Image 1 (cartoon, rainbow, N blue to C red):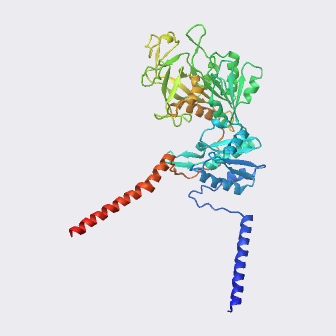
Image 2: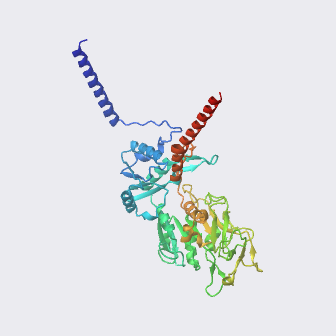
Image 3: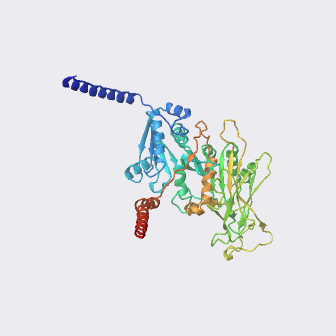
Length: 497
């Protein structure tokens, strides 16, 4: 073959290869496909998710707000790529909160969330036509009961749930009662629920108030997913209690956090006025003040009216059954089971120690120095301080039956409870769990669980610094010293020989 023909064939080969390469790229652009070779097909979408994506009628924006050092970011990007491959209506945006401050501010302006109060566990924000849904890191993973070191990936369930929420769902509406000197729902006022308000808004709750005296109260109650009685300091009238009772028995969810109420002109505890509401759930509030006498459980400078309690197993108290975080409560009243016909047996959530006492007044409280002594007529513990109860479903299609949680202290919703250090913030965590249990909607059981995986190793900046020291300094230095020792040993041996 001559040189000219050889050059012609070479040029033709290059042109053919180029044509094939262009054709492959064109076909791949028009016929996109992904393969999931991971164990358990972690990034393969379920049929339920594909149905959800196929039913979209408008764009949905998913903003990933994790930094590059977060171990969950890479897996979420892979999963979101699978969502985007199934539907062109899914718009994925990646925002690094450490670098894209302007984009973060724009995001929180759109979602009406105070940037300074957003917690560090935010992972995703899903938006559509003015509706938005937050997904936290806790939503993305579950813990295996058999092996706590293994995590159950729930990213698909969390993302699909968020998409469904902004497409067809509304925010959970929490209604706080007013008119009884309850805690204010404004986050920055004295005697309010404080940062809990911002926390609830971040967790996709809408906060409203309802005056049970007003003529519109019954209509407003029907729009509430959960009604909350937050630390009242005056009693409820019979008509008000009847409205709450009707709301609860017709399928509502109710949270009552109420400590003892003292009469204006005496030190005696007066009735709260909600017995007709709690009795159908098998719960009764006693008109007494609980005082802890175990020095190891009493909070400083509270004379026994502030103390630490223990939790009992329930969905609400999940994660609070150990020694940490501690659950502290202040100005609490005892609760007890009331055997009423047709009422369920309630579950105990919080319990005092055996050394606690309960009395019907706080006479001489200003003169207490340390824990008061036992007086005739005082009851001796242990005392139940929080209970949960659920009645039978009114309809087979209901997510759950009427639910009630009673906490014997308004401190459970107070601002200072949510500002405590994590080690003693157990009551705040339980309150969050209580609201979540009461507002619980049907689980996305049609999105199956993924196979449990080993928890990733997360290094802090200090940990990475130590690793760099070991790899770049100490390990080479140790090898050099070892080599020097061998060299000196061999040299001394050769001299003797």
